[in-house]
Length: 103
Length: 103
DNA sequence: TGAACACATGAATATATGTTCATCTGTTAA
DNA sequence: TTAACAGATGAACATATATTCATGTGTTCA
Image (cartoon, helix red, strand yellow):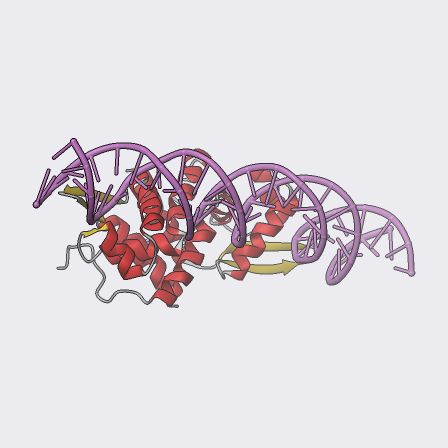
């Protein structure tokens, strides 16, 4: 049992830049709210926008960021495009953060 | 066993703003590198700066952010001030993100 | 008490980033 | 094929934030 806060091997600097980019994506309330909203099941863009009471354009822009970082999955059905979280991993990262915020 | 990516109860909007602020702190490579560096054990500011090959002022500014967010612990010994990670929780958040970055 | 050292901090600057507005693409149904 | 709808996207703008420079604070030791 290793209980001290150190890494088995110190992460490469290169990797830490990538990691920072990942956390940056989680570091925006709009994106977090989107992720939580679609964690309950896939939803089209306009529905997300309505639930969050924000403009469609804003949501689209942020969904693009989530897409580029492979945090969401996309599916087209007719005129609508459904988004949902890519996998449980995304949810776990949020929950891990929540643990800290909720003391 | 719940295996679908949804939250038991959808986090409050207020909380999500706090959570975004937390992730924002992790979303900077300098702060991540500092956190990883001091995860091996407490270090004075100048040593951290030398290890990262950055200015003392830059490190101090970022350590302040980490302090304000209670992610590091501080101890003064003479002229030097030693910093280390506050607890295992911080390390776990980083590791959770690393898992995702490393596929 | 004063010099040297370790660190913190305010101001200034450059850069990154989120939102809005206008417009564009792609799909459906008349 | 045209109108209406859903969504994407570029440009512009405002704001946030990381770094640097100069300087301030606190500690040690001569």
